[in-house]
Image (tube, helix red, strand yellow):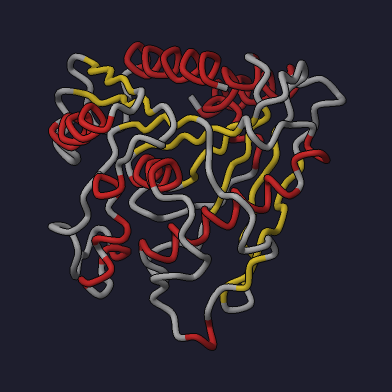
Length: 282
């Protein structure tokens, strides 16, 4: 099994043209002296648009060698999108408000360097699943909060971002897989998800369902009807708010889909919808 996985990985890496090499560990800021980074995956045939992939599960942002992310993002690369795998300050040390602040800073940094990446700063999308879906929705629905606002750190340890705080942090399209949308009932001590343990008064400011308005970008939600961790009602409740505000949106319900879309056919169904959404709106 391990040998087969290694063969597949080698094939994926070798399939990338020489001129489409990954740029790893681009620093967009620091927390407590630790670097905040993203990896840049250029397409062999770029279309001028970019997609930020939120590296977050349970608001743990786990580092991996960039080549190991290729199976997850290859469909976007083949469609011409430059992909940015964004890492935020991770649980358990850092909390959800910190992650939200970090990914906003990553958007600003990417926009300020858009020319170097060969992309249009106005053609940026964002995508993630679960906690990454939550962060994607925060970027789509409430992108403009100033860096560090709501941070759980003391002022002396507040983040030091490299992008200008006044740079536009908006995105042009969002795809969120099975996202939590209202963190107010979830906030508090949590052994499984320690990032949820922050002052309750911060929860409303990081609950994307509270920030829907008519100026929001197109939102695609993809959710399984057998999800036991984040119930489908999370996405349907957000759809109700998007409809009221007149926001362009769509909800794809994957029949039998659980949290994570571990079934290959369901994962492919989601991936096809993901790429199609960004093709249409970026």
